[in-house]
Length: 453
Image (cartoon, rainbow, N blue to C red; front, side):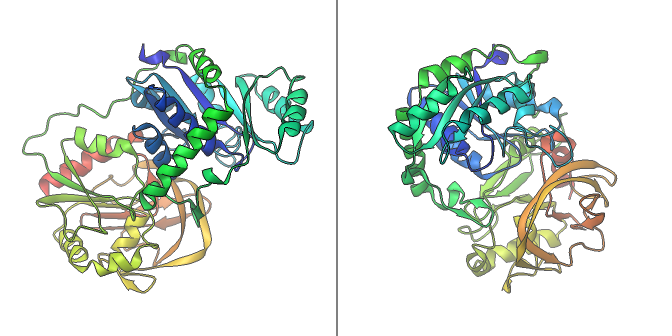
């Protein structure tokens, strides 16, 4: 049964312990064994799922209990895992870290409990020996509802170091499922917002994922990990898979919705295009770095997140596409832009001309803006009626001035009360990343506006 898909959560005591290396390497190693592996990531992060997709050949999917609510975690997991032999879920931050001030909400521990999934704890063992037992014991005993099924020791320095660690962990009674030595070959370059996305370094990323797979295959007991995943049983609560449709039949032809992609706009949730298609749209991807115009007969435009600041010169040089976007917006066609999309619609980005749809200027900043947000739609738009409540996430090191238009997109309560974003004619542009599965009416409303605009 789909609800009994074998599954593991790869977690750690803290960020930087090696979760991504282990999770991605395990996905790739099991895929190489002929298993259909479903890749998942706890939290809102877009970048790690790109590496997961490369490792498995399947869309990397996020499980975020803050953006979507705990009640959607299991259904979204089952939707992604349909037809798979096994699922691997990479955690976020430390095992018990979640949304600030919200207890366990959006933590890896909460997702593991919702899924009834055993946890493998990845421990950075550098510079410690016997203390590893105290660390692991604390994590095992902190929440009896979290089942930690084994440990993978990372950054082990030598055979002697490994022997000391194993001896210490004997007292905890938890199996050591893998030991990984320090290895530069699996390092992935980072930038101001984390790892460099796969779309920007595909050749190197393939090599990095292969190195991760080799490291995990050599250092971990894959059979024991698969056996632990198969011990999970059925998901608690009789969950059924989430589905993007079918939506109510709408009259008329399928409107064509262009969705930006490529290296500059590589951040998106797989469910968004599925929801657009289920709502009746023909979804057509395009790359603003390469394509000189929008797809023919574009009725609506979606521009998600990414790193346009890295490609500002190239985006600015593509003047014909910028003009096409501006013309589409001037016609009143629906345009949904999140974060990177917001920057692209501005008059300029770091002094370089952009699409000029919004009378605003964007620039890089030294300050990182990061965190979950509770938001309410301030103005009626192609995405949401005024008063619609959604949860979102901000993650950027840029500033847009002014930060809101005459008709703002969202009212945000924390960390301070403010209005944010722009609604003008068919355009909805904002820094806020949202997950449309939490409110499928967003996609249906957008597609209906594409039909009638």
